[in-house]
Image 1: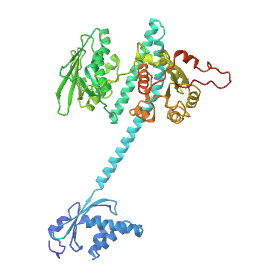
Image 2 (image 1 turned 90 degrees about the horizontal axis):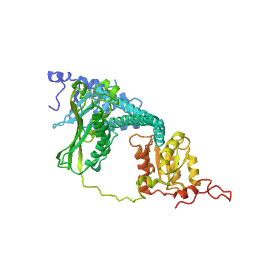
Image 3 (image 1 turned 135 degrees about the vertical axis):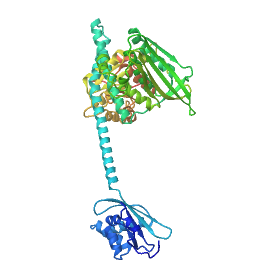
Length: 552
């Protein structure tokens, strides 16, 4: 390219006018050599000014003024400087033209000093990005709305379910006729089925939102799966079926795995196998794959049955949400159609999968695989012995618990669960009443509802911890219908000593009380002392408010 070469109408130049993007050539001295049709449409003031002999610097200024006529002088100078600096340093410029088009201009300097400019109309890309961002925001809002709805529904369902399960469990401890006992068993089993369905829906929501985390702990995998065998053996025998478990001798004794999720997957497969098998039985074969270089091993649990089997057509639906092999399955055997979908998603989170091989009328084989890290045996923790017999029950005899809940039924359920264990229960309907009772009486632990009017659980906890009273460090367990992912961690971080999601299950509450005892200690009253420590049984000759003895 010659220094003083004029712009011509030669075919080589005219061909550049057919480009969709702009193409510009500046001479080394900054004057315009060529600008094609698209470039002139993008920046008409700039190139018409340069055609008139106006300098590049001033032509850029004119173009900016035409686009932003209302800019004050200081802002104009800043913008002009930015544009000139970008051109000089060959940086991309992204600007909006007078017609509202988004145009990116790129510059590069060639060896002989000429400056080449290329413009790209990226309006469609920008609009597409805006649309995608809007869709992403709407999807996020929809996901958050769904999560909020599920959290709300979970809370609202768990509260009455707490009353149903609690009262039914209380009836189980009473002397009932055969027919009445069967009715109570049906209520309890149906309630637990509803609770399982609720938990399945929450699990599915967590997985789809990417909020379910796999948390490995070191476990003896043989013990874990053998426990499942013991748990399901009575059901198998009740149906006249066998239940066998076989272990690959290559399986390491200890593995780091998420025992809760592994058990959930195996539970689902075994319960399904027993549900759909009427003759023969179910076999679990636990196999080990090859060890990887990073100390991980693939474990596969094959659950085979001699049941009704599944056709090829119906098998394709098995792992879809809310789907079962056959619509008649729900009517005959029950179930939500979520178990297998969740099991597969959990398996995939653990580096494995759930697959099925089946033949109609001949049975099925479901294979659940996951990865685990080979681990050393965990260090044994020696726990103190307490009395004789059942350790947990021994620990709780004489413990004074303050139950704080605005719901009358929930308070009654807490009594029904705790009092047969020897716990001395006092219940109050509000945070204000709880603080007053703590100030007047001696308690060993507080079971605190989170959502209460006027003074919610977190505020009650804050006032307890900030009180500087003898009870400021009393153990507090959150009793709440909040059961979404992260709720437990949130309340523990808040200062709660433990967390129980409603509905209250006796074994879970006892486990929480035992954990708090082992971690923090729970002062236990002698039963005789507990009776004299109750309001009204103290010496009140002075006419003062009854005051409990100081905590030992």
